[in-house]
Image (cartoon, rainbow, N blue to C red; front, side):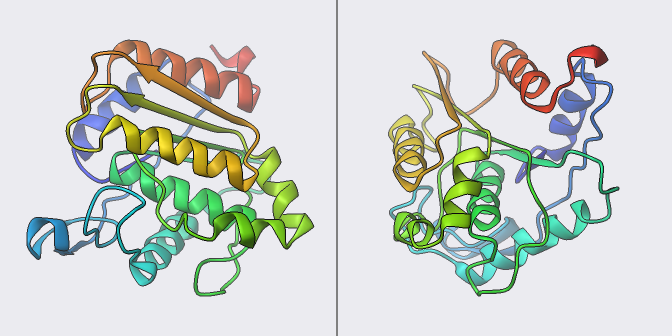
Length: 216
Protein backbone atom coordinates (compact mmCIF):
# COMPACT_ATOMS: atom_id res chain seq x y z
CA UNK A 1 0.00 0.00 0.00
CA UNK A 2 1.49 3.36 -0.98
CA UNK A 3 0.53 6.77 0.29
CA UNK A 4 1.91 10.14 -0.71
CA UNK A 5 1.46 11.61 2.76
CA UNK A 6 0.91 10.67 6.42
CA UNK A 7 3.19 7.68 5.84
CA UNK A 8 3.69 6.86 9.51
CA UNK A 9 -0.06 6.93 10.22
CA UNK A 10 -0.79 4.77 7.19
CA UNK A 11 1.87 2.25 8.15
CA UNK A 12 0.24 1.94 11.58
CA UNK A 13 -3.24 1.59 10.07
CA UNK A 14 -2.12 -1.11 7.65
CA UNK A 15 -0.19 -3.10 10.24
CA UNK A 16 -3.26 -3.10 12.50
CA UNK A 17 -5.52 -4.69 9.87
CA UNK A 18 -6.50 -8.35 10.50
CA UNK A 19 -4.61 -9.61 7.45
CA UNK A 20 -1.61 -11.50 8.88
CA UNK A 21 -0.59 -13.07 5.58
CA UNK A 22 -0.05 -9.71 3.88
CA UNK A 23 3.31 -7.95 3.83
CA UNK A 24 2.91 -4.16 3.65
CA UNK A 25 5.59 -2.15 1.83
CA UNK A 26 5.26 1.62 2.35
CA UNK A 27 7.81 3.53 0.27
CA UNK A 28 8.22 7.28 0.64
CA UNK A 29 7.64 9.49 -2.38
CA UNK A 30 10.62 11.61 -3.50
CA UNK A 31 10.79 15.35 -2.84
CA UNK A 32 9.98 17.40 -5.93
CA UNK A 33 8.46 20.79 -6.86
CA UNK A 34 4.68 20.52 -7.24
CA UNK A 35 2.85 22.94 -9.53
CA UNK A 36 -0.40 22.95 -7.56
CA UNK A 37 1.60 24.21 -4.56
CA UNK A 38 3.21 26.99 -6.58
CA UNK A 39 6.34 24.95 -7.21
CA UNK A 40 7.00 24.38 -3.50
CA UNK A 41 9.03 21.17 -2.98
CA UNK A 42 7.29 18.38 -1.10
CA UNK A 43 7.07 14.59 -1.14
CA UNK A 44 5.08 13.68 -4.24
CA UNK A 45 4.98 10.77 -6.65
CA UNK A 46 4.71 13.11 -9.64
CA UNK A 47 4.08 16.76 -10.47
CA UNK A 48 0.43 17.80 -10.54
CA UNK A 49 -1.19 21.01 -11.69
CA UNK A 50 -4.53 19.85 -10.32
CA UNK A 51 -5.75 16.77 -8.48
CA UNK A 52 -7.83 15.36 -11.30
CA UNK A 53 -7.45 13.60 -14.63
CA UNK A 54 -8.20 16.89 -16.40
CA UNK A 55 -4.78 18.36 -15.64
CA UNK A 56 -1.59 17.87 -17.67
CA UNK A 57 0.12 14.53 -17.11
CA UNK A 58 3.68 14.40 -15.79
CA UNK A 59 4.59 11.30 -17.79
CA UNK A 60 8.24 11.36 -16.74
CA UNK A 61 7.34 11.54 -13.05
CA UNK A 62 4.59 8.94 -13.37
CA UNK A 63 6.85 6.46 -15.14
CA UNK A 64 9.76 7.03 -12.75
CA UNK A 65 7.60 6.47 -9.67
CA UNK A 66 5.73 3.51 -11.15
CA UNK A 67 9.09 1.89 -11.97
CA UNK A 68 10.41 2.68 -8.48
CA UNK A 69 7.41 0.92 -6.91
CA UNK A 70 7.52 -2.00 -9.34
CA UNK A 71 11.20 -2.51 -8.49
CA UNK A 72 10.26 -2.94 -4.83
CA UNK A 73 7.65 -5.54 -5.73
CA UNK A 74 9.77 -7.39 -8.27
CA UNK A 75 12.00 -8.69 -5.47
CA UNK A 76 9.13 -10.70 -3.98
CA UNK A 77 9.05 -14.48 -4.61
CA UNK A 78 7.26 -15.53 -7.79
CA UNK A 79 4.46 -17.29 -5.90
CA UNK A 80 3.48 -14.14 -3.96
CA UNK A 81 0.30 -12.35 -5.04
CA UNK A 82 1.33 -8.73 -5.55
CA UNK A 83 -0.97 -5.72 -5.26
CA UNK A 84 -0.67 -1.93 -5.13
CA UNK A 85 -2.85 0.56 -3.31
CA UNK A 86 -2.78 4.09 -2.03
CA UNK A 87 -4.58 7.15 -0.74
CA UNK A 88 -4.91 10.48 -2.59
CA UNK A 89 -1.82 10.90 -4.81
CA UNK A 90 -0.82 7.40 -3.73
CA UNK A 91 -4.13 6.17 -5.16
CA UNK A 92 -3.44 8.02 -8.41
CA UNK A 93 -0.04 6.32 -8.58
CA UNK A 94 -1.56 2.90 -7.89
CA UNK A 95 -4.14 3.41 -10.63
CA UNK A 96 -1.51 4.55 -13.12
CA UNK A 97 0.42 1.38 -12.24
CA UNK A 98 -2.75 -0.62 -12.94
CA UNK A 99 -2.98 0.86 -16.44
CA UNK A 100 0.72 0.18 -17.04
CA UNK A 101 0.20 -3.42 -15.93
CA UNK A 102 -2.73 -3.84 -18.33
CA UNK A 103 -0.84 -2.28 -21.23
CA UNK A 104 2.31 -4.21 -20.37
CA UNK A 105 4.38 -1.04 -20.57
CA UNK A 106 4.93 2.36 -19.05
CA UNK A 107 4.04 5.56 -20.88
CA UNK A 108 7.61 5.73 -22.20
CA UNK A 109 7.27 2.31 -23.81
CA UNK A 110 9.49 0.39 -21.40
CA UNK A 111 7.99 -2.96 -20.31
CA UNK A 112 6.08 -3.13 -17.02
CA UNK A 113 7.79 -5.98 -15.13
CA UNK A 114 5.19 -7.40 -12.71
CA UNK A 115 1.72 -8.90 -12.75
CA UNK A 116 -0.64 -7.20 -10.31
CA UNK A 117 -3.36 -9.23 -8.59
CA UNK A 118 -5.20 -6.39 -6.84
CA UNK A 119 -5.29 -2.57 -6.91
CA UNK A 120 -6.85 -0.28 -4.29
CA UNK A 121 -7.40 3.46 -4.78
CA UNK A 122 -8.79 5.53 -1.89
CA UNK A 123 -9.80 9.15 -2.55
CA UNK A 124 -7.75 9.41 -5.72
CA UNK A 125 -7.96 10.07 -9.45
CA UNK A 126 -6.64 8.55 -12.68
CA UNK A 127 -3.60 10.14 -14.35
CA UNK A 128 -3.00 9.35 -18.01
CA UNK A 129 -6.68 8.65 -18.68
CA UNK A 130 -6.83 10.44 -22.03
CA UNK A 131 -6.49 7.91 -24.82
CA UNK A 132 -6.39 4.96 -22.39
CA UNK A 133 -9.35 3.20 -23.98
CA UNK A 134 -7.79 3.37 -27.45
CA UNK A 135 -4.46 2.06 -26.17
CA UNK A 136 -6.11 -0.96 -24.55
CA UNK A 137 -8.56 -1.74 -27.36
CA UNK A 138 -5.80 -2.19 -29.95
CA UNK A 139 -4.26 -5.07 -27.99
CA UNK A 140 -6.24 -8.21 -27.14
CA UNK A 141 -3.68 -9.05 -24.45
CA UNK A 142 -4.03 -5.62 -22.85
CA UNK A 143 -7.82 -5.93 -22.99
CA UNK A 144 -7.62 -9.33 -21.29
CA UNK A 145 -5.37 -8.04 -18.53
CA UNK A 146 -7.56 -4.98 -17.98
CA UNK A 147 -10.74 -7.04 -17.76
CA UNK A 148 -9.28 -9.46 -15.22
CA UNK A 149 -7.49 -7.03 -12.87
CA UNK A 150 -9.49 -6.51 -9.63
CA UNK A 151 -9.69 -2.81 -8.66
CA UNK A 152 -11.34 -1.30 -5.58
CA UNK A 153 -12.06 2.44 -5.56
CA UNK A 154 -13.61 4.39 -2.72
CA UNK A 155 -14.34 8.08 -2.23
CA UNK A 156 -16.07 10.33 0.29
CA UNK A 157 -18.83 12.62 -0.95
CA UNK A 158 -17.48 15.57 1.09
CA UNK A 159 -13.86 15.31 -0.05
CA UNK A 160 -12.62 18.91 -0.41
CA UNK A 161 -9.13 17.97 -1.65
CA UNK A 162 -9.89 15.48 -4.42
CA UNK A 163 -13.59 16.11 -5.09
CA UNK A 164 -15.97 13.15 -5.21
CA UNK A 165 -16.77 13.87 -8.88
CA UNK A 166 -13.11 13.09 -9.68
CA UNK A 167 -13.48 9.68 -8.06
CA UNK A 168 -16.63 9.03 -10.08
CA UNK A 169 -14.89 10.10 -13.29
CA UNK A 170 -11.96 7.83 -12.47
CA UNK A 171 -14.29 4.83 -12.12
CA UNK A 172 -16.06 5.73 -15.37
CA UNK A 173 -12.79 6.13 -17.29
CA UNK A 174 -11.47 2.77 -16.10
CA UNK A 175 -14.75 1.02 -16.86
CA UNK A 176 -14.95 2.51 -20.36
CA UNK A 177 -11.33 1.45 -20.98
CA UNK A 178 -12.23 -2.17 -20.22
CA UNK A 179 -11.45 -2.62 -16.53
CA UNK A 180 -14.51 -4.74 -15.82
CA UNK A 181 -13.53 -6.19 -12.43
CA UNK A 182 -14.08 -2.81 -10.77
CA UNK A 183 -15.80 -1.92 -7.50
CA UNK A 184 -16.60 1.70 -6.59
CA UNK A 185 -17.62 2.49 -3.00
CA UNK A 186 -19.22 5.78 -1.96
CA UNK A 187 -18.93 7.12 1.61
CA UNK A 188 -21.60 9.69 2.40
CA UNK A 189 -20.43 12.70 4.40
CA UNK A 190 -16.77 11.61 4.47
CA UNK A 191 -13.98 14.03 3.54
CA UNK A 192 -10.35 13.48 2.51
CA UNK A 193 -9.57 10.83 5.10
CA UNK A 194 -10.35 7.21 5.83
CA UNK A 195 -12.78 5.73 8.36
CA UNK A 196 -12.93 2.28 10.01
CA UNK A 197 -15.84 1.16 7.81
CA UNK A 198 -13.79 1.89 4.70
CA UNK A 199 -10.80 -0.07 5.98
CA UNK A 200 -13.07 -2.97 6.97
CA UNK A 201 -14.36 -3.08 3.40
CA UNK A 202 -10.80 -2.95 2.07
CA UNK A 203 -9.97 -5.94 4.30
CA UNK A 204 -13.00 -7.89 3.11
CA UNK A 205 -12.27 -7.08 -0.52
CA UNK A 206 -8.59 -8.08 -0.29
CA UNK A 207 -9.52 -11.27 1.55
CA UNK A 208 -11.93 -12.27 -1.21
CA UNK A 209 -9.76 -11.22 -4.16
CA UNK A 210 -6.48 -12.68 -2.86
CA UNK A 211 -7.97 -15.85 -1.36
CA UNK A 212 -7.04 -15.00 2.23
CA UNK A 213 -10.09 -16.57 3.88
CA UNK A 214 -7.98 -18.99 5.91
CA UNK A 215 -5.63 -16.30 7.24
CA UNK A 216 -8.05 -14.33 9.43
